[in-house]
Image (cartoon, rainbow, N blue to C red; front, side, top):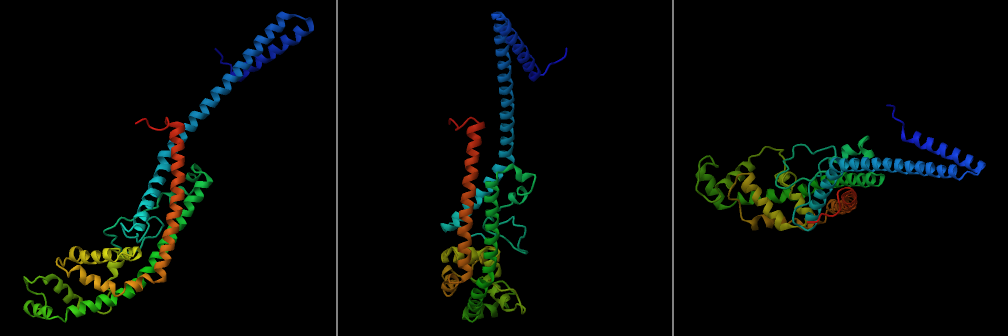
Length: 326
């Protein structure tokens, strides 16, 4: 049996209705005019049904497409924006140091340890910003994400430019403190008793003294002592936060745990080193530049995050039954 398309049936009904109507008018035949009305109504009903069916299909396709976009694109973007926002906000509140890097900008610093603190990422947009993925976002969203990406790159550059000036200021103070330690009678006595650390000693600072002894024997030139503190263990982050207490604790624990000295000097010893340079560090123009870059990045992240959140709410309300009842 041949299937007649709905549009053809509508056309046929309309033509027959028109013929009956014209004939009825010419002959003044009420019956033909009535039939014309019936057929015309049927044609209209078919047209409405056809339009409604097509609209339902379009709406179903839109629902499926947007739910797929949500899972594949929108939620991953929101997740990265949220963790970036949280990390910057925690630094702003001095709960964590400012991150020394935001991963996903296409370049990662070589030889970094990245210990102790989480490194935020902004990787997804690097992929999604290219076609055909980009077409799943509005132009407004694309501009917002482009701005966040640009701000991330500016932040990374600003932090990287701050590293060497901080090392240059802090390292001589640490070097001087180590050499002063080596001048104490306790150190000299330990050195003589252990042959410079070659034999074991029950002295409280045995491992620390051994570390100082090795430090004094380093070849020239060597990497600055504070390089790994400032960069890999992110002492720089606490400098940027302006929290000398957390910076002090980080230095002490790094020697204790990561450099295996186990019993380093007390916190006051490390704080005295930092106090001698802290005002100078905070006055660095590079530090101020990082503060500006961090504030800009946080603002851009908030704008993008809030926009994605609003669109996720729209998808929930439009396609997922609205607000949850529980």
